[in-house]
Image (cartoon, rainbow, N blue to C red):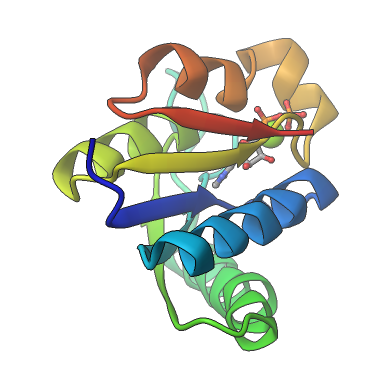
Length: 141
Ligand SMILES: Nc1ncnc2c1ncn2[C@@H]1O[C@H](COP(=O)(O)OP(=O)(O)O)[C@@H](O)[C@H]1O
Ligand SMILES: [Mg+2]
């Protein structure tokens, strides 16, 4: 088993911050590189039949705030260098694709996330990753 590339999925929740701390610790111990990934999910409706796509302005401001308010402060707070990746789409699928395409050896995720409604309506991102990720998944409470 390779231990050279780790990823951690961040959504701003306390659980995902604890996943970052765990991932950083394991990266330090193993010398693996660490990538942060966050997925900006377009507003409800875009994926369904109803609703119009988000305006370009709304999407670019969501992307900018994910970069500046979520990813950048985490990168700054860590003692190790990390790369931050931002994807747009459905979080579970986007993270699974990211892990496959980047040969991620281990994925860290929080057990819960930043959305109660999402969990009820869409099921859990953590659950989906635990079942379908192409690599071992560490689920951090
Ligand atoms: N949009 C996202 N981008 C990156 N990671 C995410 C995203 N949504 C959830 N995650 C990851 O999955 C974990 C569990 O969140 P989730 O399954 O969405 O629970 P909840 O239903 O409580 O929001 C989070 O702590 C985070 O690690
Ligand atoms: Mg969520």
